[in-house]
Image 1: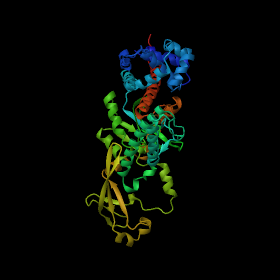
Image 2: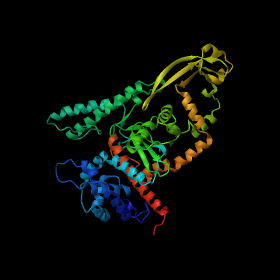
Image 3: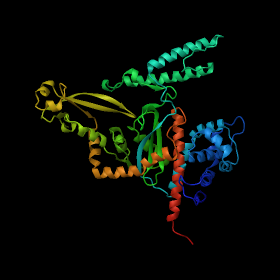
Image 4: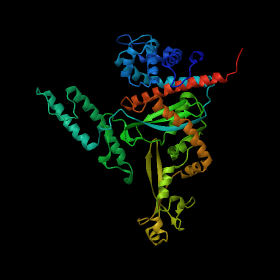
Amino acid sequence: MLQNFLLASEASAEASDKDKADWVEAYVNQIDSVVFAGLCRGRGSPPNPPAQMFKLVIFQILKKNLSPAKWAREVLSDSILQTLISNIIPSRTALYNFRDRLGTIIERINQSLIVLAIEHELLEPSVAALDGTSVRSYGSRHRIVNLKTLTRRRNELAAAISRDDSIVTQTELPSWMGKSIDGRLLQKDRYDKANAILSQRIVENAGKRKQSRRPIDEIYISLSDPESGLSRDKENVYCPMYCGQILTDAKSSLILSMTLSNHVTDVGTIGPLIDQVKTSLGITLKDIHADSAYASLLDVKACLERNVNLLAPVQENSLTKTNQSKKVDKQLSRDQFTFNVEMHSYTCPAGHAMPYFDRDNRKRVNGVVVMERFRQSTEKCQACSLASQCLRGAKQRSVTRVIGQEVIDAQKAKMTEDVALASRVLRAQTIERTNADIKQRIGLRRFGVITLQRAKNHLALTIFVLNLMTLRRLIIEASKHAPATT
C-alpha cells in the first residue's frame, strides 16, 4: 500500500524540492477524498481542489515557509510547486482561510498516519517520552498592559467612539488608538475581550494563598493576543506565549499526541494526553519518560490510575542543588523532620512533637492539591538548642505535607540514580530532538496566528509534517532490512 510513498531519495532536510514534492504527492494521493469534504462551505465561487491545496500547504511547511502570504508568492514563482498542485493559483485570502479550516481535520489526518504506521508494523508504541515546549505568540511583547492602563484606554476609546457621530474629523488621538472609525470599533472589541480575560485572571489570583498572590498592578495581559499566557522564554524575554505538550514514541520518534494551552506549566497534563492516545489511537502506553516538572502528585496519581509507569525524577534539579550547596546559613530541611502516621504529627530534629495545625487547598491545572501544616509551639521553639538552625528569624517552625505524600515518596524511591540517568538519555534522544525539530527543522519559533485555537491548529499542522517525514524514514529503514526476494 505504501510502495508509492517509498522513493529513492533520503527523507531529510537535504532532500531536493523535487524529492519533497514527489513524496508529498504520493502520500496525499492515497488519502480518501471524503476526508477533505467538509473543508468547503458549499456556496460562493467554485473552490480550489482541497487535495491540491493540502499538498501546497505541506510542501511549503517542508520548505520552512509558514506564512500563507509567502505561499501566495511561491505559487507564482515556484515551477515545482505549480506542477505539484496542477497549476492552480489560489489567492492569498483563500490560503489563509484554508489554513484555518484545516484545523477541523488535521488531527484526524495525523491520527490516521500513525494508525497506518502501526498497521504496517513500523512501530509498536508502548514507551513514550513527554516534554513541554513554549512558542511565542504572534502578540507583541510591547503591548502588554495591566488593569489600570487597560481601564484608562477603554475609557478614552469609548469617548472617542462617542464623538464619531459628529461631523468633525478627530485628529488629536493617542498613538495607540485606531485612526479610522472601523478601526476603533474593532479595537473596542479586542479591548473588551482583554478586559474580560484579565478580570478572570485577577479573580483567580485573589483565590490563591496570600504569599502566592501578586499585586493587581503586576497582573498583565497582551492586547494583541489576550488569550496567550505571559512568561519568560528561553531567551529570558517576557512575552506572550503558548505552551505545548508533546508525547513522542520513544522507538520511532513519531509524535503520538499533543496539546496546547496558555498555562505556562507542565503540571497536570499527563492524564489527558494518555487518555487522548488511548481514545484516538487505541494505544495503551506502559512507560512514560519525563523530567521532574511532571513528577507532581497529580501527574503521578494520574499515571497510577491508568497503569502507566511514570519515569520522572522528583525535584532532581542540578541548579537547585547547586544553589542549596552555596548557602552558608542553611535551615534544617523538611526531610530532617519525621512524619508519624499513627499520631498524624511530625517529630522535629530535637525530638519534639509537632501537631497538626490546619490545611488549605491549592489549585493546580486539572486538579486540586490539599496541603496540611504542622506547627510547633512558640515556647518549645524559642527554648530549643537548634533554634538558630531551624527558625532563621521566625518565632516558631512549621512544616507542610501534601496529602498523598507517600505517592511522591514511592516515586522518588523508584527513580534511583541509574534509572534516572537511563531515562534522561532516552529523553535526550527522542523528545528533546522532537522539540528541536519543531523550532529548527520546521522553523516554528513564533506562531503566525492569534487566539489559542488557531495556534493549536498551527502546531498540529507542524506535527503532521514532522510525522510525515518520520514515517517515510521508517519505511526506508524497513525496506533496507527486509529480506530480499527473487
